[in-house]
Length: 246
Ligand code: F6R
Image (tube, rainbow, N blue to C red):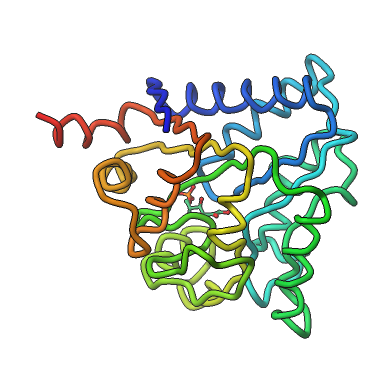
């Protein structure tokens, strides 16, 4: 695992965007794995700016998102499909047909999990997966205790995750309690992974990731078993580490 330390959120976002843009330029048919949440928003902003300024094209890029809330339609402002359209897809030249987010309002969620997993395989897997991390160590919505062999599946969100994500909803009661997420094994099959970590509230998680052994009680620890992971972390996130190491 390689760690790149940057000064702040802006630098993290710029570095991550530059990396992704470079990959897209070299491999225009790349398959990207994308995340939602607060962490990647700056990265997406930089990608949009570059697209407008330099014309980097996403016409032949395919994307798969990590997760989606169960019960929210694509039109719902809190759905991850809506988030991705607003934060990225509507502002670049990607073909929406090539952007895949699990469907959050279908009749048979189990069937949707199988469809999504098979679709990723059919596309030859994910070339570059972008991840954020939950303060409890979740990646995607794989909460502590998730099997490392899991594929795309339905999850009950941890109370801490519901609380953390309530900032986007009017009321805590409005936050869905279930979601569909790529599994740990789906994520681990990605050829390359970039983990973005920013802010003091993530420093404990980062410290645990680096110091703890690989264990299902801390999902992100599985990344240590992946041959090609780069962590881009800002000073605030890394601060805890330094204290830890003294
Ligand atoms: C989002 C996702 C989650 C987030 C994590 C951190 O698609 O899969 O694992 O990356 O919850 O969220 P933020 O970035 O909001 O702190």
